[in-house]
Image 1: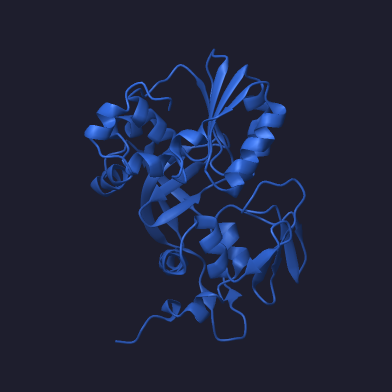
Image 2: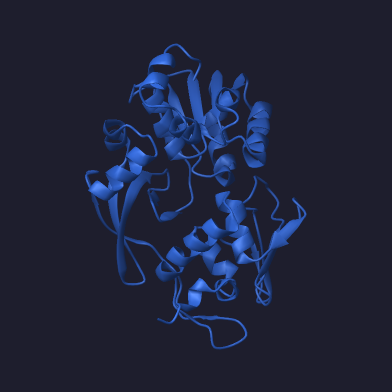
Length: 299
């Protein structure tokens, strides 16, 4: 049986980085036919310094002093090894635009888009299994998420959906991580304290750990550290802020920026080191014994 073309790393790396980023809701701040400058998807910044060379189909982050191919970029964005990046791209390419690979560079035939077809209560067994694999309490997930059915390039899919402030959806399932629009999610109440999370899986992990689906705090879920600037006015308006960001360079930098603008900020990431994030911490626990021992811990 002939191997599919996209199983070859060289072929996968021909897929335009520009279109991969567009499928993630990331578009250039400055653009011309030869290259584009973006706000880096790998860290928080205000001046675009992430260059994508359209002709060579390579990227370079001037702030980090690093660059490479599409596979290299996915490894950095998803924090995974090359093999996992390949597997993710193999799944994603089918959902993205159709390209002609006959020339030196692939030619896009149409722009990628995610079209939401139906939103319903979260009940699909495959999605519930995915959430349980992530350690998430299902009743908590049902209270904060929906089951979103969507279409990309005439193919239908479904995912766990989490609404953001732009009215769009953050979408997750075993094989896909994306969004219909780039924006944070804020939950308002008459509270002086705000909890800040990088992604909604971390938020659901916190609620699962606390065994409380409606904690008495305001909440800001960034949905990406690239959305930090959009969320800062809301976050900084609180008397006390607790940050539950990732234990990586981007998370530490975002926490440091929040410390500058917030009156009182407590970095909670120390409580789930050496894990990368709160969901990794949750998944690393033994369901019964660890859950009992956790009572009263500072998370």
